[in-house]
Image (cartoon, rainbow, N blue to C red; front, side, top):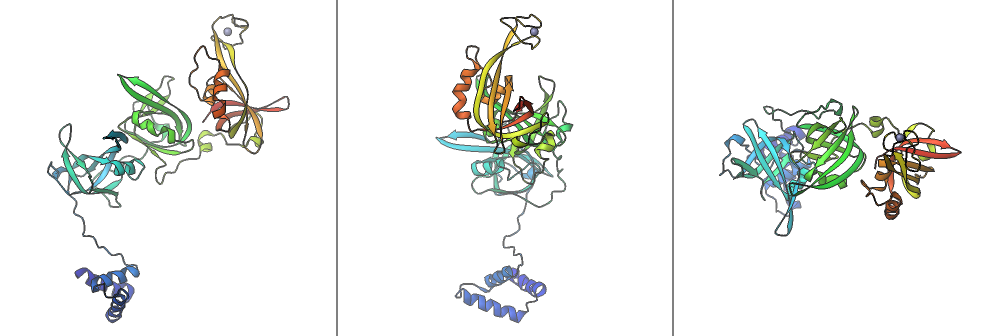
Length: 419
Ligand SMILES: [Zn+2]
């Protein structure tokens, strides 16, 4: 009843509705509901109609992480999310399940929070991001496997993002710019655009099946190769060129070619199209404009997005493994080396509605174009292309390269197969 009195006061003060007028309105409201509303409920309804925020919930009392023990039940906490681990999926009794672990902290300490199924998927899809302040309600504590305790939401528990401030808990760093990444950096967050999709490879390590997927990402400062390991690579098939991604908890390592690479394993995660994310457009990052096939200018670097209409030529070329020169019968015509290597060649017709163009690709690019990583020694490239043809025709490609005019014919020389 005290709340109703306070609302009457506010209706008078903030909306200019006097006592008598309000009493009439309450009576009217009660009649509207055939006498089913008591006075308090009627006052609430009127206050709501007049745009007054009505707090019907009792204020939550938040506990402290440091005060939790194995017996804690009905735990309410106001925390900052320090880390979110990759989503893991499993099967239990024939039913699929998923789990996401988080680390949350308040000014008294940090604790592991375990989310299952729906809550896990919500967090995985970006409802919760590293650095967010969250309200945890009605959670419970369990002994953790490695000692200590961990927090579970269970059926009755909830976790929601909060606008409240947590002043005594550090906010964490803003995402790093790719141009600032250096070999050996740990715990790196990056916001970037997907520029190029590589491939996913499955392998065995110590008798355990594992996988790695690779792609190229960029922001306005630079570009970098990104490797996704184990369960993080599960999302690879859902990724598309130009998607915005947030990498949480990655690490930087020098690759075989000496360039820095960003790696992401089980202790981090990839967030697809995170909220409020702003990132430079693809053409600003690559400095290569996306051009309509009909508007390509000779010699200018460009990217095209076009559909495969036909495969015109596919064969293995022979090149010198030492100097890259032309090979005769069995020997290099320039350096006389007998180290002969084969190189795939593909000529294809593509169109984007504005025109048609012939694209030529060599070596790795030709293989990537048809979607293979390796070709066995006893199979020629033409055979691979014949087998793949049906699934390739009609497919859309992003290709980077330059158009050249040869004998009145326009030819797009591919420097990079983006996807
Ligand atoms: Zn040679």
